[in-house]
Amino acid sequence: MTGRVKLKGKHKRGERGSVQEEQQILKGTNMADEEEVCSTNDKEAPTGGNEEDARPRTNIEDISLSALKEMLVDIQITVSDILRQNSTLTNEVAELRNAFQQQKTELTAVKTTLAKMMKQQDDFETELVATRIKISEQEKEIAELYNLQDDL
Image (cartoon, rainbow, N blue to C red; front, side):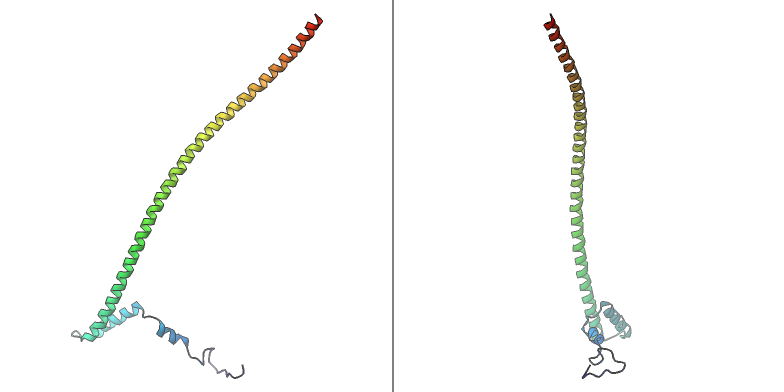
């Protein structure tokens, strides 16, 4: 730290000064502070007050009223957009529910058909086994008959 002398009690910004004062100057006025100024002006002003005291209060009220009106319009626009989006989403959800219900009905029908087909397949397999056994027995009988014919 050559060339700089550290002073007792000073912070990093001690040589440059406080930044807090600059920030307060640069900040815009707070609406609540403006309303307090208006209310103190009303209390301090005599009943027959001059126009200079009344004029700043009216300008601040006009500014705050116009700002409030703008905020209200913005809020109303936002609420109407939200309601429109909500309505759109409600319709989409209803459509999805209908589609889901249709798919559920179709799936139930497919399951029923599949169950019938499975039962029919089992019946056919049972019949096939019985037929194969019968054919096997008939082949044995035919072989016996050929043997008997040869013997005759």
